[in-house]
Amino acid sequence: MSDLRDLYQAVIFDHNRSPRNYGELASANRRAEGFNPLCGDHVVVLLQMSDDGVVEDVRFEGRGCAISTASASIMTETVKGLTVKQADQYFDAFHRLALGEDPGDDLELAKLEALSGVREYPSRVKCATLAWHTVRSALHDTGDTATTE
Amino acid sequence: MNQAQATPDATLCPLDVESVRKDFPALHQKVNGRPLVYLDSGASSQKPEQVIDAVQAYERRDHANVHRGVHTLSQRATDAFEGAREKVRSFVNARSVREIVFTRGTTEAINLVAQSYGRSRLASSDEVLVTEMEHHANIVPWQLLCGQTGATLKVVPFDDNGELIMARFKELLSSQTRIVALTHVSNTLGTVNPVHQIIRMAHEAGAVVLIDGAQAVPHSAIDLMALDCDFYAFSGHKLYGPTGIGVLYGREALLDAMPPWQGGGDMIKSVRFSGSTYNDLPYKFEAGTPHIAGAIGLGEAVDYVSKLGMDRIAAHVHKLLDYATAQTERVSGMRVFGNAPGKAGILSFELQGIHAHDLGTILDHEGVAIRTGHHCAMPVMEHYAVPATARATFALYNTRAEIDSLFAAIDKAREIFHT
Image 1: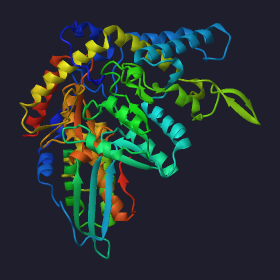
Image 2: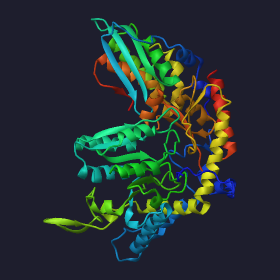
Image 3: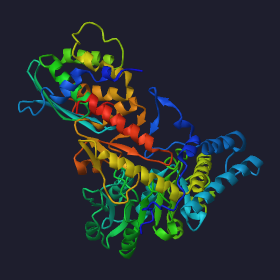
Image 4: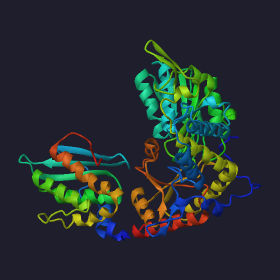
């Protein structure tokens, strides 16, 4: 049996209680919404992109479980300062991490590792990946509501 | 008195839960190393051996298509299928088996009424009245119907206690109201609605009434003749029967006048390219080969709960709910949604600082199965401005010790979350 503490690490509680980059972003020029229709979790990601495609600033809003809130918070810390291409690489690596696959060793994933416990909880993988699906929609300006379906 | 509001009767011989539990094989297992505590029967209940055996016996020996062959197996299958219909009729006290239509479940039954009754009769000046506490299955079919006919959907709100605001119902009910559709028992709040009064008032206003009985049928005895509603829908899998089978009760005169919903085999008398004639009730609404095994399983489930006695089941569940409700008071930061007097065995709650999904995962770790999320009742979540709630539902096989396990697991969650 897996230990609950592998899922609920101290880092998760820290980000759940004090989410980073939470709130509005007046200077945002990209916005995407994420929605998990199964559980009703909802997240909005706001990006301020530079002309040469770098994430200059990022915020998120919404309500969700500890896993989805912490994941959104860590996501914002991760993508700030990245190019779209780099952020996409992090999306792929995080996705593999959440599914229990090898994320590769090209990227610095230390913070994201805190969420790797979801691999033991298939019903919770979507909680962890919602914010990442949403930021990808915002980065590529698809105009769709991102879902984890 | 409201018939679903079965007050526990102290003179009843109480249910022998330990012996009942022996009938349910799924209850006797460990989940994550802990004995399973199944408190999610409101979503779907477990099945007794009797139901599992009846379905198996049919599949192993009696299976053939119904209403078709002259051979022995077809006759056996037809007898068992129609026997189940009679058991259901007797269980809910309908006048005739012609009023008992087998469907895939409550959802399909409501869609059938919306599309067959509603679509053939409603016009743009008409209104459909639902309540704020409905399951999505009793909202979306009416939204679709209103989209198709131009009719307007009106919503009766409930108060923070979880009770319908009857003054608003009276205001919203008018000569334009053609259909009143509401739940007998709220799947989220446990509220038992005053359906007798609502049905009477709706009839006086000239509207027909559909009752969503998905949660009410397992909760207490239903007497459709006394209730006098026009349509009543429920599911087998919340009544200890199989999934994929449910029932639409419809007043015979209404069903008779309604056009078929789906076309196909079994629902016709004759088919010619110049035109077809439709079968008698209830077959007119049962196109295609039905879920024969499901109906037989449902018939067996009806026998099972009837033998135990719906009044004894209701009394048992009420005691469990009282016991659980008393425990909620000692948990700081616990907010219960739905406090209507005489409510059914449904406990929806949230814990301050712990999202329902996190709670669900931690409880599962302790072997305790509850429902978390919006319970297919997003407007109820909106009413209380919460994204999700946790919901424990109590059934005939649950025990006080299991409620102790629930609250021990809640304490564990609070410890993990340091709340």
